[in-house]
Amino acid sequence: MEKMKTLTKDLQTHWSYIQPILSIRNEREYDLAVARLNELLDEVGDNAKHPLYELLDTLGKLTEVYEEEHHSIDG
Picture: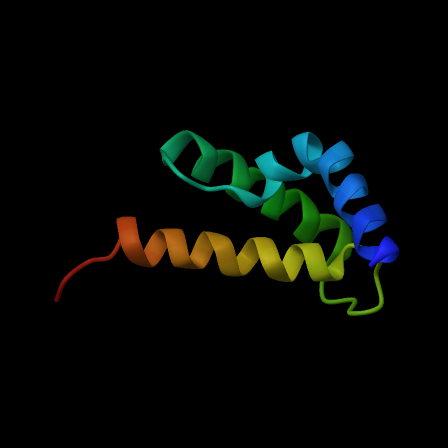
């Protein structure tokens, strides 16, 4: 239980830095996410061993979901 309290406290401390990276609620945040994603792609590429690879993967999934909900073209 003590470990969870420490984790929660750490998350609260760092959430203000993490939240903008993992939140896509509107077009402005989407544009920022795409820019971040492109920067990560330039740095990480397809190197699954890179320390930021999981962030690249997560951000890619978040932008994909936003695009499906807000930029879909009904055929």
